[in-house]
Image 1 (tube, rainbow over the protein chains, first blue to last red):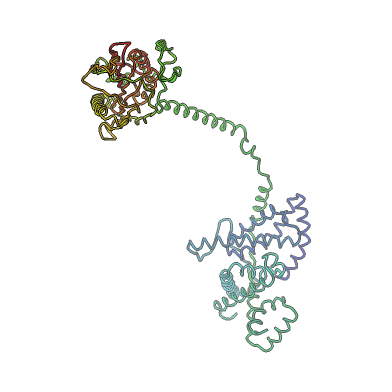
Image 2 (cartoon, chains in turn orange, purple):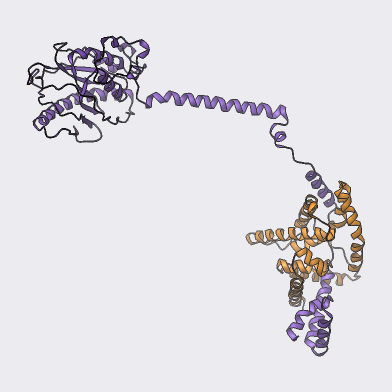
Length: 205
Length: 372
């Protein structure tokens, strides 16, 4: 599934450039096409970084509005998806800091967020046939979410971009604005921490 | 690379993000180290679990909401002119009303402040007269000054103009204070210029008018007593001519009944006697006649300046000032033929309680006691 989505992303790269050019010419429908094409990916990035679906929806909305206003700063040196992801990661980081500050002052609800406008994320059931296996995976995914949520923001961003969204190291350098050695170091530490966390949570990996 | 370095490179090795040399070293180490092989396997499983995390679907309204925000952002913000005045039919009347309100409020504030101004500043009653050097004699024609040169209504000339709110002031209208006995004429020097020392005016009395008038009647008696005390002190000073200037506090207190006495720089007269009315001086040519004048003024503190100025313009010399909260007393030495112009000026400042009795008009020096 990841390979297929990766292929689709690269196939859409040229289309992105054409849509951006059309959007620069004043065609608002081109921007709408970009929104519909990238909203899911941006939402998943924001959701995995912030850990909150409702906040992720707002982050994505703000990211597209910021991209629309700041299109003049996009010079085309990188892909549009990379530039848009950079905006989304920055806004997600800011939102995460606000959430962490808020959680320090409020009690933490184990039930998780559930808003009127933003329903709970609908995680599609995988192709696993067994109900027991589905429950075990669901349990593993919940623990994995908890382990990702325990990471610091910089490690979380690196892991989300590489292991969940398949960005290359060069693209991660452009998105996070750090050197490749820093990306490798952050990714190694993030994977080690999640590995240890999962071992403590489920025993054998 | 040692074991720890190999372990740190395993993550990048998994992503095939190491150089060929590093890759060869790592694979050689993995062939020998079982722990590192186990760590690499755990890392692969962890990444596999991460990649198996399902993606969340965006809500169906997200794209529409984003586009709605984008369309709002695409509309340029109206200019300052549009924000201030459009729509004209709504904002223009409101702004016009606000301007009118501000103007009316400012006008009334200015009127209120202007009406309070005369209460806090002395009345320049005699300043409208032509400036005349103080020692120069004032012609009699100046007494018939035009009505426009009269002081404002706060110092009424006729008793009928006294405000009705202060009826107690009329009770003492017919009571004339007896003139002081004639004192012997001192060796009168020509009238010197008015002293340049201007006393600081006492603070305003904030009591009610009835209380103020009653207190003033009591204070008038106190002022007379202080006046006689002052005469006695003058007599003592005349025996000690080495002290040309002395300032004494009549009551010794700075608050109620406190009198402020300021002597002119001119040496005190040699002979002041409250018993003797007239006494010839060394040459025997001049006589000293004492005349008492009591004025009724609306603002005693504000009348200090105009009265002193009237004395100076009439050629009189102020020899003593007693300014107390209870009353004011001014001792003036003036030639007898200049008493009438001075009285005329005083009538413009306040209302005379009694007509002064001047002895031997046209000759000699008169010691005029002006109380108010």
